[in-house]
Length: 76
Image (tube, rainbow, N blue to C red; front, side):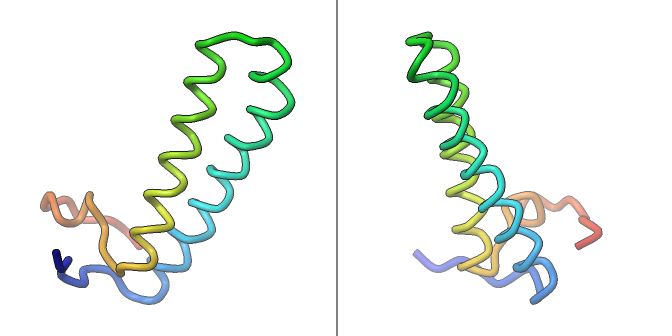
């Protein structure tokens, strides 16, 4: 499956940095909050952060943005 390139270099950098921050936040949250507490809601939130971060990293790698593909204009 091929995705049409719809973001430039600046957009790729923004999505990559954002994805790394969100994924790292999810990992740190899981290790310091969700795992010790054993709470399912906390674990689900941390896993969701990791998944969203991974998707943002994928967007940066593929030069593709799902929001732009849906027809919305973004600043970056």
